[in-house]
Image 1 (cartoon, helix red, strand yellow):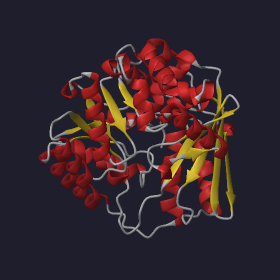
Image 2 (cartoon, one colour):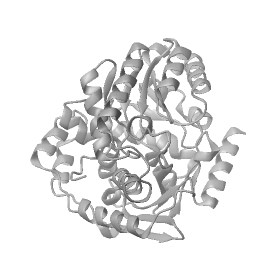
Image 3 (cartoon, helix red, strand yellow):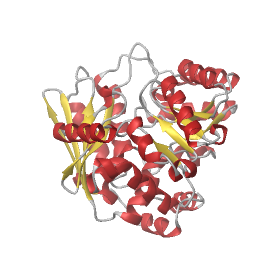
Image 4 (cartoon, helix red, strand yellow):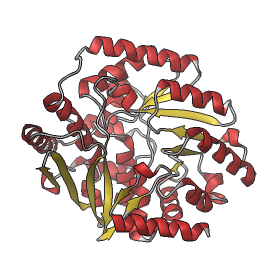
Amino acid sequence: MTTLLDNDLYKFTMMQAVWAKYPETRVGYQFINRNLGDTFTVEAVDLIRERIGRYAECQLTEAELAFLADLPFIQPEFVDFLRDFKLNAEEVTVALQEGQLKLQIEGTWLDTILWEVPLMAFISETYFEVVNQDWTHDLDAYAARTREKADRLTAAGCQFFEFGTRRRRSYDHEDAVVAAFKDVGGTFGGTSNLHFAMRYGLRPIGTMAHEWIMGHAGLLDVAAANPAALEAWLEVYQGQLDTALTDTYTTDFFLQNFSGQLAQTYDAVRHDSECPFEFADKILSFYDREGIDAKQKGIVFSDSLNVDKAIEIERHVDGRTQCWYGIGTHFTNDFPQCPALNIVIKLFEVDGVKVAKISDNPVKASGDPLAVQQSLEAIKQAAE
């Protein structure tokens, strides 16, 4: 990993929004390993630190800046800001405690926002390079399996994207995956990774993440977070990148705030927890109540998808609205006998205020325990 563009588009789009609106806000992020049985070693932690130091030396090249400048939603002034931008390794603290990796990021939101995705990639790649080596390093066979996945998704009419940077087995595996999809074509629509989008002449895909809405919960409160985050996004992007993430504080709570002009304005919503079939029906019913033609809107599904699940969702929706499938780990870290790590890095503090993500799936809740409790209480009060 030798370029700042080896990162998801949504980190850059959120960074531009933070640059425009909250450049002095300070934040903290925290690493979470959802499977404590996946332990680390001193050698692995040392290599993670080394990779962090090397990545902090990266700067965007003029060719990369030109690539960003060609994206219609990236502002020229933001490109100028990025010209001299570098990450700071001192903002990342890494430690090993009884086999558990401990990692935190602290600094201004603007300075630290690009760390999350490459750090997760470092952690995953290092783990499978140093700690767990019991897997087959056959890129040709992996690429062949990837082409089969693309053929099946295309045959089923599933419009799909590659979202696999964060938990990839290695850079080379993601490279092989994107190259295979590029070769097959079909209904493949692009990648979330800016570096691979540039490398292969593909459309980069991404809008916002939970972080954007959690940030507004810290700046304001949970009750105001969804509408404030969505309105702020519209101010920055003026009708572009209009896909709203629904489940930061549960989808039901989100839809209370989404009714009316916001629902009319945003082109799509993104699903990231809850049963996808129930979610699709819930969104379709919501659009019906709002008097909105669901066929003019869409849903991006992105929750732990594989080929079989995407095809099932496509059949369930059956053309009632537009569907897209952002598939990550199943593309870039698909080793059934040696499964991927279940890891995340989440915002946990904004200007000294602890924040949480609740989600529609209780297993995905994260954050300071008190912030989780307070968020649940705010959601309950709104429901009442």
